[in-house]
Image 1 (cartoon, rainbow, N blue to C red):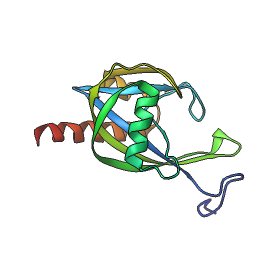
Image 2 (tube, helix red, strand yellow):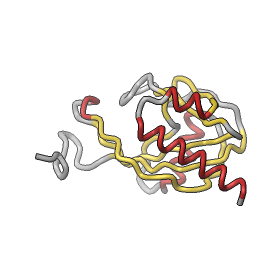
Image 3 (cartoon, rainbow, N blue to C red):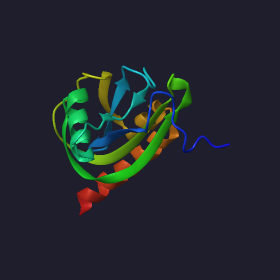
Image 4 (spheres, rainbow, N blue to C red):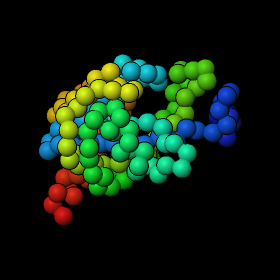
Length: 151
């Protein structure tokens, strides 16, 4: 039987979040997660959307809080369900709205929910990321930012 439609203990619904594929030329910005789920793993900057906050505003706020980077959103990449049954209890279910962004200012510095932050080559980013949906989002984000440069 599918778990779809059931509520996990302590959660009435999934947690909405926003993430950013921030490109500086051919480099992508990554953060090392300081908290669960996936603590110690490399990922995209992002976090929870606050009540009354748009997904775009949340993405840019989280980017600044975690890395000190300022960027311009160039488009929506995808919406991804991140369900981690081993993250609990309770199990973790986040609905992530991922955006592509072009770097504007700042040098990466880890803060807030990040223990490290760095711009790395696209190839290096794809090697550091363990979760295939994030690798797919990074590829799509890099393509979207490259297309925005040509427009």
